[in-house]
Length: 208
Ligand SMILES: C[S@@+](CC[C@H](N)C(=O)[O-])C[C@H]1O[C@@H](n2cnc3c(N)ncnc32)[C@H](O)[C@@H]1O
Image (cartoon, rainbow, N blue to C red):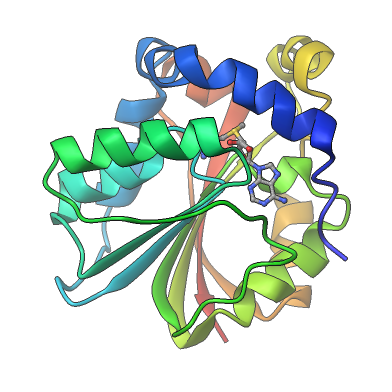
């Protein structure tokens, strides 16, 4: 199954939660996520139900609210309670109501389908990324969108790996994994500058 969510990884994210949001902002990930979400062609509706998968301190969900405004439902999914608390605080500052879920991809069962899934830098932590993407596919109906950000091979990620032991994937591999899991890759997004341009790539996919 998809979860490699060891207590060790979660406790490391628990300890990192205090400084995570500032780090993401300082390194330019907040602006990078905004650019990805705003890149045409984009579409969203105020009635949409959103889930930020592996939300951390909520940087991706914050960017969503910045581009599209508060959605009808915003579920924040993360096994780290410390991350979730900070994500909720950040989103509430933007006037967004949130549903925090202290859980992981492999065990979460949503009550109703989502319209958009946001998932930034979480696929790198699961043992079986295709299984994780398949699980996420069961959370949505056909036509729903996945906004995926995944680490790519680069020496910067070799340095980050020393701390987090995360994986990095070539774009061809992500495309194949999405297809195997029932997602149609709609477009890829290259972050224009700074650390995000070296560490990561964005993928927008539609549930087949
Ligand atoms: C690299 S951080 C990214 C956080 C956030 N998405 C961002 O871009 O700032 C990875 C997050 O994924 C969470 N995570 C790890 N394994 C997970 C799993 N199996 N399911 C859901 N979340 C997970 C961690 O607790 C952590 O908050």
